Length: 236
Image: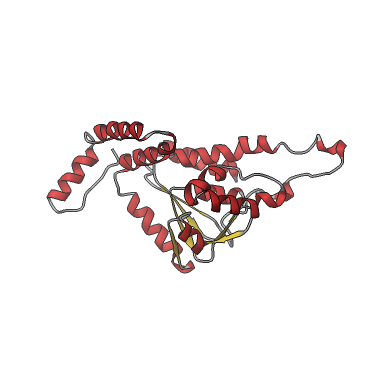
């Protein structure tokens, strides 16, 4: 599944046509994270040398997936249809906009098996909800319900379960008609803001405005506003 999802995202990144991505799960849950039955564990000293290299697993599968989602130039919407546990929760946090079914939930289950939050969750979580709540969720491994996640600012919106497909579809259809280049540069600016000073960020904004001010979509946006009609953006 890692490889199939990575390939799909690689294709999307290079097809030149896709302007918005929707990620959701199938069945009861969104993603339960790593299948623990996939790991051979033995407490005997002789067997410890044969234990799986979890760092290599993260490096080979999880991290490339999180980087790909984060770096996609188009908006990535997550329709959270059920539980997101472990790295599954990390995957949700990497998306740009999250709409969750009311029955959905998050579980940072790493602490329950002696591990640390991975796949970017230690980075995204504190930035979204603050350090005190982030540390409590990570250290206790308690379930966080969708409505609480919305109140804390971890996700964008909660809807009734039966409305999830319609609401998320409507959102991605809207985003796909918007000025994609501007949205891509907006994502990039927001991501970089945590590592730059205000003066550096002001300069980055200036450079982006300089470029976008010459774009087709800016011209179309202004023209449609003046002419009182719906804009027809091309993503360039």
